[in-house]
Structure formats: C-alpha cells, structure tokens
Image 1 (cartoon, rainbow, N blue to C red):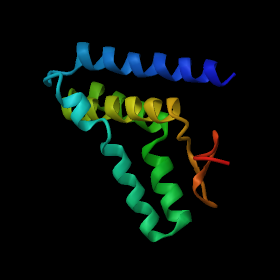
Image 2: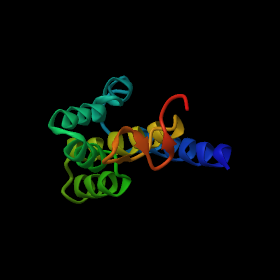
Image 3: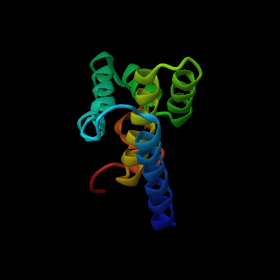
Image 4: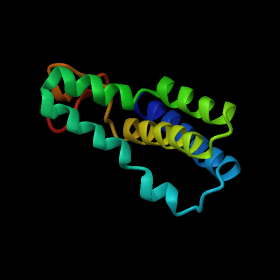
Length: 118
C-alpha cells in the first residue's frame, strides 16, 4: 500500500510540473527554487504545537492549493496561479517522502505515521 501511495503522489507531482509548464509564464528554474518555500510554515511551531500544526496543515492542504490555483486562473493573476501550483507540488512531494499533515501532539506525528525511526 505504501508504494501505491508514493506512486499516486508522484503522479500528482508530475501533474503540477505539467501545469507549471503549460500555464506559467515563468522560467523553468523558478519551480525548483520555490518548491521548498511552503516549509517556511514550520515557523508556526514557534507558537507551540497547536499553532504550528494549524499553520503547517493550512499551507500543506491540497484543497487550499487548488483554491489558490483556481483564484489565479479566474483572476488571470500569474503569481497566484504559480503559488497554487507550488503549494500543490510541494504537498505532493512531502507526502511522497512520508511527511504528512501534522497532529497537535508534535511535528513528528503525522497522518501518514510518525516521521523518523521508530
């Protein structure tokens, strides 16, 4: 089952790359430069586990990424569309590597299981 989930997230990551290629006017190098920016949401953990989990999960939620993308598409705003693509690609990439949405019990507790060694 784990392999199936990884392949599914890989397919979604590739979909984000395709969306970037066909719908973004930005240079190709901007995608890899920006792909890790959503991890800045980890700074929410400076406010504690509950705040950190909320901020992190909000930024890493695929529905939010899709809404941002659709807003950029609807309003013809390339930077918003690009932001939605990056959020979606980053969330897919994270889940491929086992980093899921966080529980309030701590950063290492995710919906995909604990991060790191058991």
